[in-house]
Image (cartoon, rainbow, N blue to C red; front, side):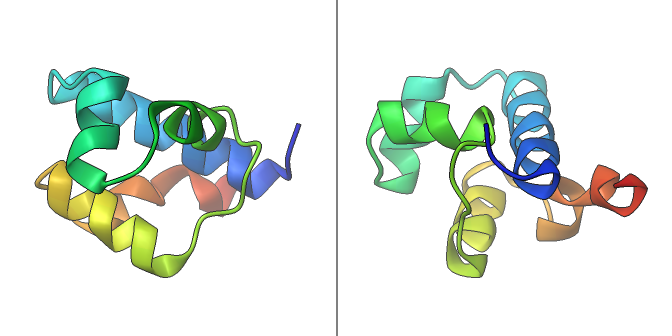
Length: 74
């Protein structure tokens, strides 16, 4: 597994994706990444760039801050 920060981000991303009714495949397609890479992000196996955080937020119609909410508890 990755770091606690990456794992928390992945949990937030997955929760936001599901709350918006997106499949992992749809989010990956809209973000221009491979579905397997999206899975690794959601499992906290990779550290994403700030650019990707903003891209995911744009795809999910939320603010980047919403994807980072639980990170303060780490």
